[in-house]
Image 1 (spheres, rainbow, N blue to C red):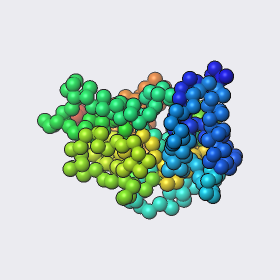
Image 2: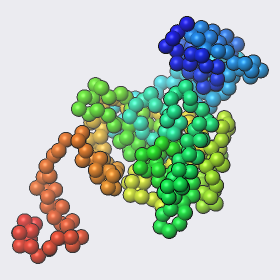
Image 3: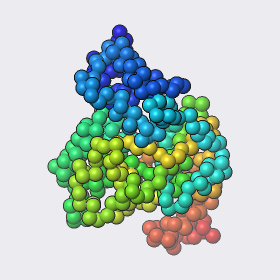
Image 4: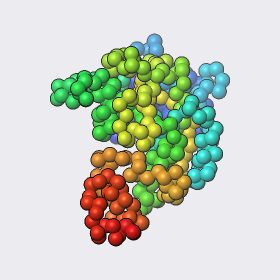
Length: 351
């Protein structure tokens, strides 16, 4: 018996089966019944309990979900394996743009993550410890967020009561974990986020990843003003074929505009149409190129008070402004009439 087994003394469920399938199928192609046998043996041998309902084995449900997410494939009827797709791995901005040009403009959205091991998963799903994660808990977390926000009076803006999705969008903006998953219309902005990491010690930074997702119907449905009135339970359904949604909030803050953001949601995880791996040792160079070519910097990605503070945190090295930057600041101050424009010192400095 393995005392370190994460699911010891737990009944086999589809989510546990999914973890074991990923482990047991690595480099193999197995018949479904053989895979079921091996999953049962592995789980029971490590101290877990077998499923009580044998009419629909958890492995069957797990395989259906994994196939939808692109994690397994059935090369021939009754057999299963892990896809051996060779993913794009890039080291330069030019190489990334060559990959991004494959996608028709306006029909795809992008998401960048700093660790290539991450999938497309809502942050609210990751709040409970892993062995307690399931759809019911995921839904409950979002419902609790909304209820507590209303109780504390955080459900109003500009004299009107916010809808449930609008409450979640505001909470997401300030760092709460919700069902909403941030994407961008811009592949370059997604790349910038994928290049996050420890730039002082790049050897400690993992590869990044950019997802491309087609947010077109019928898989995705746009949130209209009529749909916005629905409660969160209407949108979150525990089904392999559940409807997914995309939403561009009407009340857009500076950060949403700067990041060309769009929310995707409807389940706690779903598959990408394509992915691109970003080499860890190229992250800093790519970010430098993005700043030169497109002006993408942390200041521009987070153009609000919270972002202003974060960019100037303890971890960010202090650098003095250059003479040209001082001059530009002076012109901005004059334009906004926040200083005395007739000051002889200022006029002499600017001229």
